Image 1 (cartoon, helix red, strand yellow):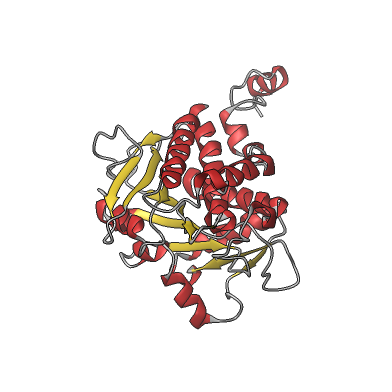
Image 2 (cartoon, rainbow, N blue to C red):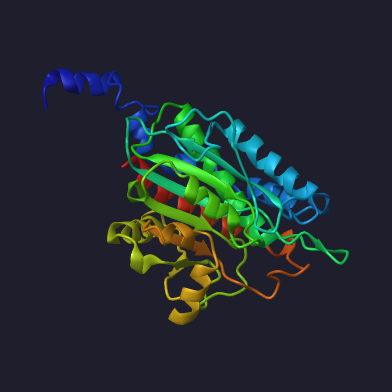
Length: 328
């Protein structure tokens, strides 16, 4: 090794060696994964599932409150607005407004982090935020369905926004979208797909988060599990990333690709969730979930059924995978 380089190492003069350098910190994404914590996840879930939001039905006052909450977090965490759905247009708002076929007014919340260069590749991370509302005077909180997925989305937004603010720019563009009107034929997801100002073949992955917060229906003995649907239709390097990051960062999640060894039910469930809309356009798409349970679509779907330590672990795993795909 040349003497000058040895001297620089000894004096810690090299900008690429210091403990706070870009290179060092990007090679240690666990420093940023630690920003994902169960207290913040719980805070998002409890706000969205509180009775004040009336179950977040599309077009309701509670639904509008949820829209505002998510848009405020997008702005706070550093996303750029993408309300038109078209990165090539001038966007001034996160809100993408639309009308459901049944007349309800819905609003997707869409933001993005541009890549470090003029990349024509995109990753889409999505979760729906609407729920059933109040039916015949009975309140449906929707904590797991799907405040849990939105909470995970917001935590990911905060971490990637932090990376971007600190000058660590991704190699691929990342779009984050909180869908409205899942309960009205997935209208929000359909509007988003139709409004995209980029070709579908430039989206390298859609990662959709739905029902992510419980450990009530494990496919095996482990409660630290996650269900992954659609893996057979995405490039193999994406599945390798899911597996490798779980192993390398010692998360110990039971990654289940079989959906309880029921391929037929897996296909049906996949078509009932939003990633199926982009998948129909040829976009590699995955559904990440903890599965249906006895509380799904019931008034008992409250924040108390959420397994926060496991949810925290799942979201950190998602971060590692997205970091791998977006930054490397």
